[in-house]
Image (cartoon, rainbow, N blue to C red; front, side):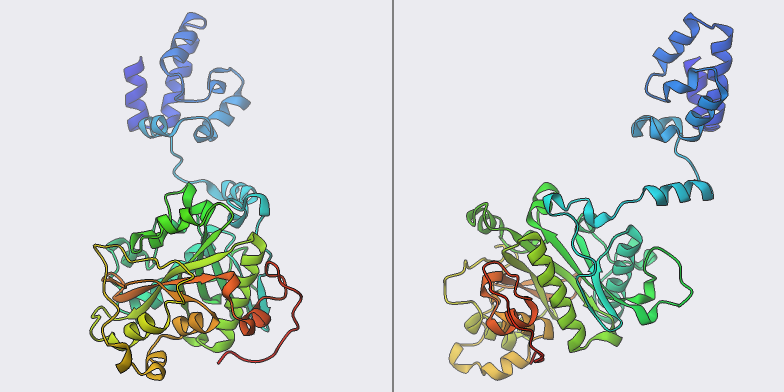
Length: 393
């Protein structure tokens, strides 16, 4: 009988298995039922063997709620489609993904920042995360020279394992949302910018930071002690129609709000210069090496030995600081002007066609100009600051 059930489960699915079980149970109502449950324990819910039709339907409709995954696969119990009613029920059960790993702090404010038609908040559903991944694909793989895997190219999304538990900052342009749109998720065309944020406690619980693939940050994070809390920034991009100073300023407002909400102390992450030939990037790399590694008070975190690229390619006396600053991408330039420093060594990322440097940005080192503009007076230990209207140079 067990063999018949196995064959039915593999060939004909759950309905055939249930029919065989009930027929066997009717023939041998006492000992037969006990033997059947013993032989197939864990493959379906116990309600399947109770004679009422209501409970039978409940077990047959939702076997995946009671059955372990390995046995579910063996018996072929995975439902093919949920149907409209099932999708509506799933939608009611969905929770804000930003709240899943928020811990004692709770989910971040909604929105984190807003200006005119632009709003910045954390992605709340998996569909919104996919919208951010599609924007990343458009920028990194279609506009730039990143190399997509076959699956990424087929789905037109940039993704990795860190996306599953990171927070995804979204810049949403409400002018791109149709007036008659009633969906819960933000439509793809309305997502015009994104940033991936990963807090230390989340990363440590799920395999570490992305930056650790390129830079030796583990000893630095551990040596900082339990009172210092880290935030990794990465995968930032903006739609070509919104690459302007107001959009970047709004993203920084949101990041500072996120820092304050979670009481974070240090930001860091990989920032990229386009190109994989360090000699062609000699001026910006040398400028950062000589002028942007801080005064020695901050730790000098190095690139991993097997990936290390020396940034000291031009002697300090021969580096024109103004030209070196102008040669930097706007994002790195903004980091440095706000008070960030650079790690030791660069890393060539052949997948994305870039040369990466490490940005180290303690919240306490944000200079006064940016603190007043973006800090809203609620950074740790700060007094309330007046709102200023100056623009970022």
